[in-house]
Length: 331
Image (tube, rainbow, N blue to C red; front, top):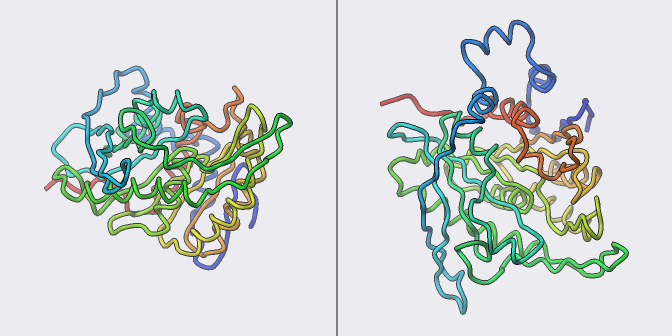
């Protein structure tokens, strides 16, 4: 694995062949020629930034059936929000998986499963966004199937053996159900679906990408992981090696391209563990790129994807340019 400033580009067999010069140019800022081009055709990042003060759409409530996900094996209706750009579609679709608050009260209060920054970016591109609220969160309610069993003592030592596989599998099933629901929606281009997620939702996207359904063209993992507690153990999660092994298994089964984006000052997982996780994943040979973004100035490196698009969108722009995820021509 070779290291570039703030970015890692693994080179296993079949690794992602990204133009490094283009990615570095995006990450460092446009040249004079690029600025001229941007004036006539703004990038998605620029379009999202220029729309930062525009009111966001409220989103349309959706309900997705989850078979056997309720108490005592009953069916459960998973709530969420749908956001669509203007026009009839069909639109490429981003399925965004939210993170996991450490506190049960905060999980119960979750109302929107995507940040404003992410929503502005995808809508500016002309993509539809589906943001489900998984079981155990918000209005969906139900049991907390994503409990991982990670515990720390007062000195920040991990005192348990978490079950990250169980948590990721439960979350992955919600993506499977969402994809099945999408196929019946007339506004959706179910042949061009991108998975994206933050934190536990990033891990969810990796798990779902390992057995991606038809139409899934790739995924973006923002700060994906589990088992962190920045209050008790800043920068180090509970049993990160176990999660590395799980990522390795996902990598062996993955056939779609992926982008992993972490800030260097991730207060949940630290600087080194995400690098090791992606290295284990990349041994599987799928097209994948790891980006280590510079430290976020306010210290919230784990929440990089919630910050201004200028901090992360150039990496996403470069990745999307290498996969088939564009709005189809008007019919």
